[in-house]
Image 1 (tube, helix red, strand yellow):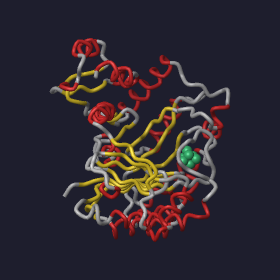
Image 2 (cartoon, protein in one colour):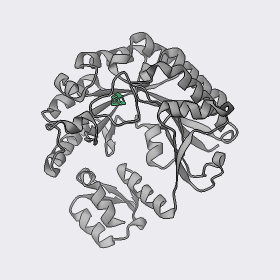
Image 3 (cartoon, protein in one colour):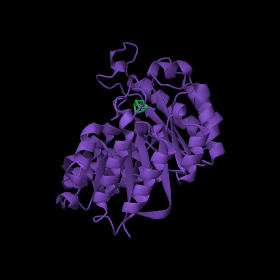
Image 4 (tube, helix red, strand yellow):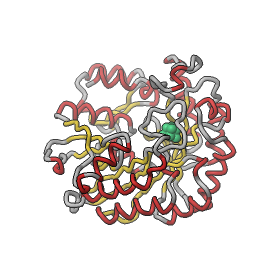
Length: 374
Ligand code: SF4
């Protein structure tokens, strides 16, 4: 049976962080129950179309899904299994922030079958956390990991942001060594227009040399600590690569449920009469989404935008996504073979068994390499 992944979007946060431009709001938190009802209706709409396929991973992201009560999470997971078919023993991830997880909540999540916890620690430095507008501090980060371990979580990811002025990367790396997560996502701080951070004069992007130095240091320390650098921003202990994210990078199909969620199906979107491969995006904000799903007797797909991918777009996307991972891409796809030789000599790419992949140095200049080679 062909498989696919499911992404559930919970677009609520207690307060917006200073750098955040994700689809999340701190204004509609009271309406979570209505929102969950809308997601249940949305899931039901897919039942006739996906009855011959099964789910290989579920990711509950946000926003801050750990704001939800266990009963609300239970309803979501029950609704998925009622409407769709879930493979046995799949990866089920939830994103959590340290300030919104208690020992009881973590135990309840684990009992629901959620087996991977992705914690937004972001930094092991209280001053950095404050400058980002985060609601937690380092003590609560350590406590969150401890509680998660006691609750039974054996697969924990932590998110860390780097590229922040005055940040000491050694402190961050030591923090990771202390909490020993199975997976770490290192995200470079992007200063998004219109966020409070973009008006703060201290926050400026690093120059290329400083960025490269930082990136190489992170790579070196993480690999020496026993992590595999398996994707541009992601490190995992052996056997702990994220099934869900690998599906994105391998261009696997995924269903996006909830306000602002994205989905992608190579086989098209037959539920709205489309046969070409396409990506879709659901209505946002949550009030627009719930209105679309719950009005009209729960018969309307809450899709607000569709992007059809032609062959060129598909190839380019395949190249970009494959090069993000260490699996790389077939050398057959490379147009500029002379440049391929030069880049190999310069240590930016490596070729093995007719597969081209980026070296860690190459990952720092990935966009330029892709544009020139293909
Ligand atoms: S917790 Fe995450 S989604 Fe929520 S405001 Fe902060 S960065 Fe944005």
